[in-house]
Image 1: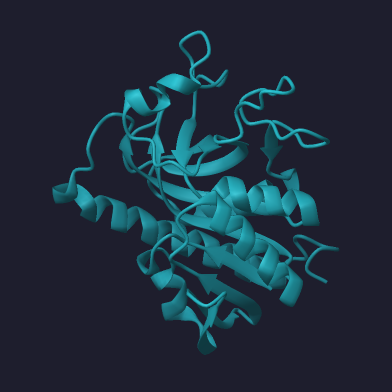
Image 2: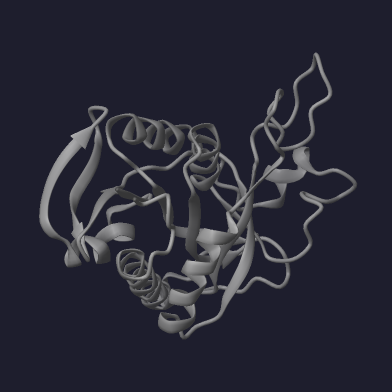
Amino acid sequence: MILIIGSSHDDVLYFESLMTKKHNDVILHQYPVTFGHIFNQDVALVSEVYTNYISSIITQYMYSRYFVFLVIAVGTCIGYSDDVRPYDIAFSDQVMLGDVDQIALRPVALGEIPGNYPVFYPVSNEVRNFMATAIDLRISGRNINASYLSSNTFYTRYEQVKPLLVNGQLSRIHSGLVLDCTYGGIALAGKIFNIPTVALKVVETTFGKPINFEEYQHILEAQQQVGKAIVTAIGNIGSNDVLKGISD
């Protein structure tokens, strides 16, 4: 099963419109999920997920109940570095957790969980390669290889991130850096259970600037392109032996 997680119903609406044999349910008492088929692949859509805590729990729960072999995070993010523009499509290369910053009893770097957990969670080359093919085919707008800094706080202002800055920087990454609130939890669960994960999100605005709701149509158009790319990638899983050994 392919699991697609969005923060709002709008994030998954395109996929729902293409599903066959679909039925709706509620998991963990409050999170709506739609099950169905896209190109004969089992797909589950979960929405109303707004933090890494919840996205991690959702991913782990679905993994425990179903054979989930890929998790895709969709929706929107905030551009942080200067080279990221509104309406870019942020194709995840790696993610760092934004809330695991300090533990008083031991030295822990920003994003690091004590133990055998990395600071950065990279997307596998296999997943990136088959997604890139679909992105090149279906996305006409600008897409970037993005590093996600994923936090349970919806950072929009400098004052919010100031306590996290080291030498005036939020991260050692100076290009392609975006902020979101769900992909980190998905990637952490993926690391624990060895599930490939990837994020394909639309940059709705840049850091420190309000969302221009008069231009929101551009975000919706970019999200539709994301949907087309992901659906194309799902079709390729069944037809071209991509993710061989994972989807079997």
